[in-house]
Length: 157
Ligand code: MG
Image: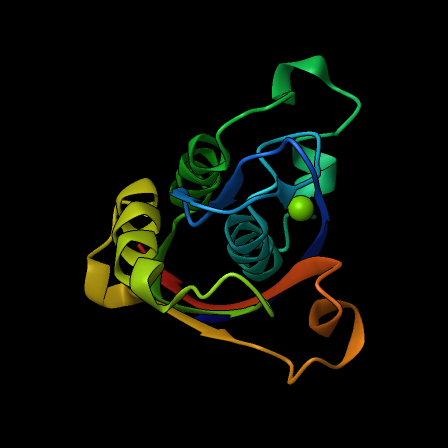
């Protein structure tokens, strides 16, 4: 088996959609990035790539490549799952934590789980998503951006 860990941060910006785990969350601002800036999807992809010892999403999907401008991160996640499969691994379990002071995310957690499980080709039971604030501390607490962490367990396919 292999374990992997991923971490990502994106800053808030006006005039952007807020996409988390493939869910468009209603908000007066979104996250800035070359892709759709889906910070939790990015953390989970990096966890899988870490477990595969296959670099990171920055190397695989460079933000200098116009092909990835505004791209749906779940499309990229499906490619990461394909890469795991090609290398003889499957995702057994994953868990994600999102740190956001606002907006409240509890109501979107199940939809995020379903979306990311579908992208990975695994059961929704295999993908956990949790959200927390940071008690107004740090850049998350000042509502400057959102951070996400993910861990994943891979087994031989
Ligand atoms: Mg990112």
